[in-house]
Length: 583
Image 1 (tube, helix red, strand yellow):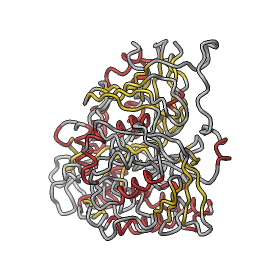
Image 2 (cartoon, one colour):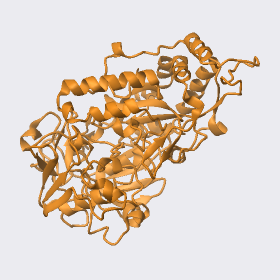
Image 3 (cartoon, helix red, strand yellow):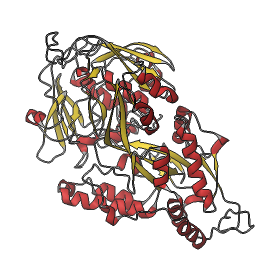
Image 4 (cartoon, helix red, strand yellow):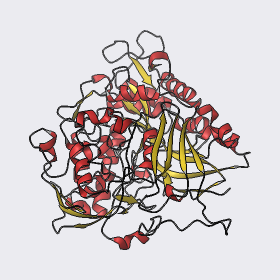
């Protein structure tokens, strides 16, 4: 399945990365009064026409994206940031993440056994799917079974693999996951194979409509019309019409469990990135994530407000170390080209990251030296990380020490065996700034003697680019990417040797051991857990399995007529049922 969470993130993990991606915490309803968490026991306040500042029913909002959706309208199968943005309107999860990046009850509450292995979930009664069926524990159990099925080829097995019996189901040795038990229509018991600090955070929390998918084989689900054309969700809006490559029309779901949404509907429009500012100014778009290049033009737009937040996404340059063995669920480092650590460190010193930020991101990013964003409490202090400040002379010195020397005098180094050393660099198409950014990165590397060329001579269409990464296309030797981590600070789903989204296919035993230890029972002690993650970040920082570039500042352009938008580190699509139009 495709997964590249372009900024958005946008991008997954239901991967979730989504990446696959999503955060949870402890126990009961009392926690719903935490900052940024909606009390889900109350419906929307009734709309009124008496107070001009009170929410009103009616109207359609135009939500824009600048890339074509892949069209997987079931969270268990999507792989792109754009699909995830659409799904935020149409689907619902058992848990909800607050502004504090902790997890709170949403559709379910839970209790934990004394041995911390078994979680018992109580699901809200009366919650309706878009087709009128009631949500039950069977729907959640079914979703877990699908993700563990041997015929499931998506990227989210990681979110069920630690349930007791999931490995047997995934290997085709069992028909069901032994650790998943439906106690009654509203109670689900899940037992994990071992105690891990983030068993709840990592658990797949989005149910699937079991009755609706009845009779469809798991291998056929991703391309079935019930996923691609006629999806059924639990969210405040349901799909009415899809125009491939152009738009997805969503209409209000009156029976939404948190109360009738204020808007009549939302139209998700695919627009050319060069038209973002103009369409916001003209009122053709009400809200979208914008790029730093749009800021100057939007500064004079009286009808648009720009909001920003420090988010949980970062950009990097991936390095091709090998391929992914899908049968074993394991990365294989069989490409020797980039396995010299000094070569990788030299590339870091060669990159003028601040100049790239200033020139192509309008200064709206922060240089990063760790793949754990700084909003997390587990982030290593900068004083303990090599800063890799721009130093082309240091880069040249490291290359020479590693045996990469210019033998024939053409200005580019040969490899330690004296053979030509050429590197392909890949970047996806999109904003007009991408071409310049890609060429600037290439020039930085060429300036220290590395013969780097743009793969295929041009930027690659976004979904094609994702396919190339997923399929370990050998043309992608260095590749630009961005990750949206979600609310869980654990980087296992992106950087463990077993992770499908570890697109560079980095394998390091010490890294895997540290990541596992950071989730062990000892890690229930926050200080212990942070210490392990700091050690892991220092290892990553030294080994350089990817060239970490910067943490992105999330920017949003919002028409002033659109009210009720609440932005946090995870994005702008929080409580979209509360969005309303003031005119």
